[in-house]
Image 1 (cartoon, rainbow, N blue to C red):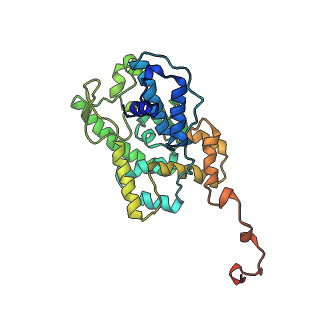
Image 2: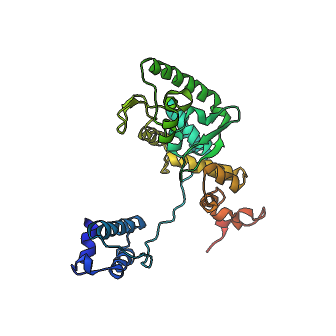
Image 3: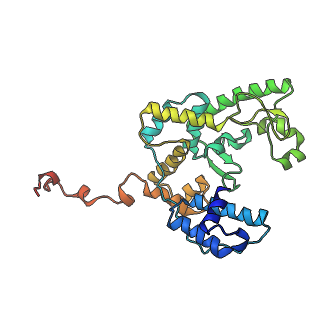
Length: 305
């Protein structure tokens, strides 16, 4: 309602039915050029106006694409050194350590890691399958050798709990609707269980069934924030920073950018290329000429003004 009110006031309190694409375009351009709002804020205003015309006034609007668009800020991702990653992981414990290690070791987004099913891990091939990632895309990425034994031990504990729940009449997990209709028993099978199940069972608000969901994302986020603080890092590091660091460290090691793109699941290589700008080699990966001056050249601080 606030955006609709501002739109009407901007146009001298004229009734929206008396206005159209010209006034809307002018208002959106005003937000970008005069009010300097963020792109997301401008989109909120446009969505509110669309709702007003389509759902309230029952009027169709033409395509609105001539207004001045607010610019999205171009920010480089925060990247950690391997020492900083080790410091963060060193202050994580138990399941949180395993999740954090996978985020960095496999380049996963947080929810991709938490939604992993037992069947997604292939210890023989040392790969894991990310299902329904960003953009509803599946992809294969690496499973770090160092996590083989900790993950297998973790899964043994999860399986024992699952078997106990089956004996109690529980043990089901959420599945895609079509899959559940075709294979009703799959929800209780071991292969479809979450790798990182929640500590407690809960009631599914849609089906009303008592089941165990995956570990809550906020718990991992809090643990990582706490680890960053204890490690004394000044960088604004989050769970997603571990994924940024995964990509950057692979590029530093000389891996092809197309390979890194596939591991990250980026549809456009330009998204992956942002990591080439944060490599630890100075601006745009170029060495300063001051750093390769010949031995014996006058010291910079010995020159007087």
